[in-house]
Length: 326
Length: 265
Image (tube, rainbow over all chains, first blue to last red; front, side, top):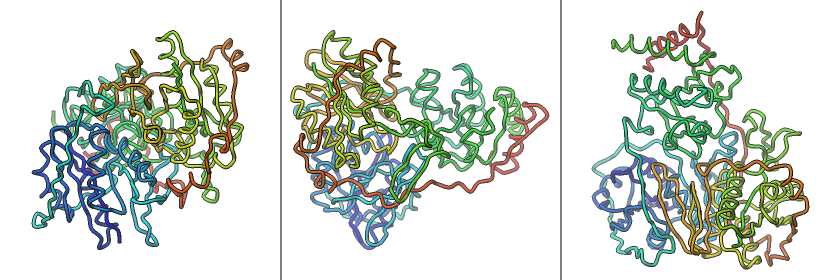
């Protein structure tokens, strides 16, 4: 039995991110009769308490202030500390996100504890909470426990099943009045830039077509974009090609980029370095198009075509258009 | 200005997953024999960031700090060959087995001992254990402003400016020095050492520190952090169906048909 606190995550437009439900579900599973608390820290988030309750939270701490709109370490640390103080959890779950990546290790050091980063499995074994995390870019896995209390962990998006919401469920709501004081911040936020959203969001797309170094040039992405448009999908890219400037960083799939889990993931000219697999291994069906029959990614692929990507994609595109009757 | 860059020696991250040696008994992962360890990729980028700051300022000292066995001297040499000025190797056997939480405390002790460091740079995460906690630890222990996962970092008028990489977009921030900054791959490729610099690096100073030199108690440093209970390779029980055709175009068409048949599209 453990009391678990979940620090919720939000989508850009302020709605509750799926990751929040996924974390609450995971928290419920390890709580085993303990209490599940959730924290909503943001601007205009108080209306989300019922939704959080519907996923399984017993109590919801709400810190609603415009100063929490953009994540800043110095704004979030005091309010999370306040909530940890009131909740007294044994385990604190955060997202492996802009927020959790920064905040979780910091909290761990503050509490002389530890943080299991980027976990994909959480279970209780012999009275201790065990976290499974991919290491070496996913080439191996480590089951870890945390020395210290509370135990902190960041949860990889889409690694947990979100529970079905039960709208009849109600939670106690606790308002937190701690307000951030930006004038005291040592790190000043000058500007936030968000890329123009175009088409379907990579994380939400049901079909993702990703390109790697094997495309040969930045122009190759035009073909992938055409196919993605036809299939109402989104285009992803390997880190190597983002680093070379062939495609925008916001489309990077992998350990240091985005995690996607579409029904269909088509990897074109991607060898499947562990760091890339970390971002796409959760896809339901991986298809590989690669000239190298020994490419790493084949082992994780359901279908593969070995050969020159361009004519293969041309044939694929033609047939998909035909099947769709366009 | 004195810049400290924290680097880590790791098993070569280009090693294909299938060739990694995973030892659950010792809880260690290594590359096959003969594959030399390398500087963790993001740490080499942190060295690059430090060199750019020094070049822009026209002055400064860059100290490379690592915690590791005697062999880790190699990663310091590599950073020195890139253009860094001096190195510190904490090679105390009592400290080299610490996890990233303990290591952050050792690195912070080195920075405190150096005394005049204004900026600490490190990689966003090490390419072996993929934790990404050292920068946060340094910031917490030193009590300095901390900026994580940046694609650019510059210094002017005793202030550091950096651009954080977010999942969608970027965040430009500014902080007073001294500060801690962790860098990401978007910053750009680390430079390749020139022969002349490699030769010069051989004459640069590398100092060894022990736990005693830093006033650290190794036992206490391992009281927090993580304990690895089990280490293993993930298994995929998946049969890959290779789709062939008389021509590549035809193979592509067959792929589309096969996906339709399997009700995937």
